[in-house]
Length: 296
Figure 1 (cartoon, rainbow, N blue to C red):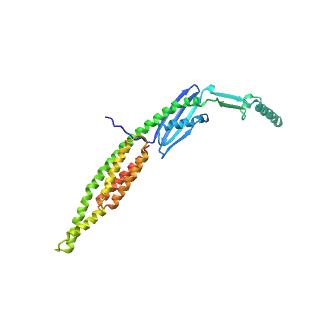
Figure 2 (cartoon, helix red, strand yellow):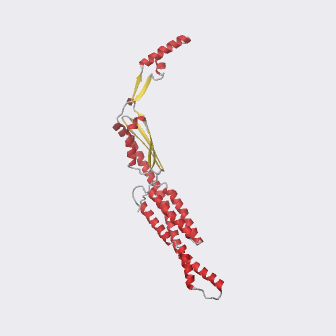
Figure 3 (cartoon, helix red, strand yellow):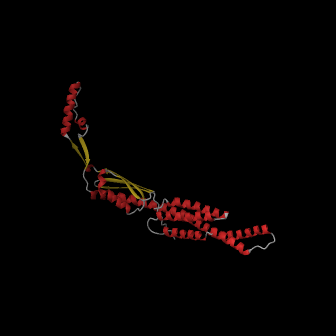
């Protein structure tokens, strides 16, 4: 049975093109990590009337990340018109003729030369209504988004596999911490009894006093609550991954809570082996935190 991965990355890329009677459109989309949902659009001025439709269309497929959209268009020939300002051209011609006489130069007699002067000839795009522009843009936009979403899912699956393996390592390590904790108290009791015996010789050891000291030590280094909470966070982390929708922010919060418990375990530990295990847990947590930063 094929595993179903739930996490989605925030990085992806898509490029698609479509054509219509008005022209051909190419859409390029890049998806990057970001704390929130943010869309950046670079489109020809003619498409400004459909910007909100573009943002809405993307938000239906993407919940978080910076989405950079670039749109280029090649208009059909009939979509352009050329206009000439004859009055301005005449003024240029007369002015240049007067200048030529003053400088004793040949006057400009070519229409082509005059048409190249500023503002004599203007090329403009034919007006296209917003609905037509949207129908022109939407197919390429949808295809590009599909590619981005697919890439984000593939990257998310890779992240999930890596995160799951590290969570399993941490679970095994915290179990080892739990097994080691009672041994630390017993080792302290034996060590304390031996040191007291060495100090007082044949005098009988006060067992009640010894038990009190051991109990105080056990209370100071008790990490039962921390290990229980850490395991609870692991379960919550796994349950969150199975939730639908974006969960990156929630996973990041859980990682912070797990890190807090690991710090407390390290601080309360009176045993070098438990301290080393806590360091291993924190190292894995940091790697998971880095991965979670990429999750939608």
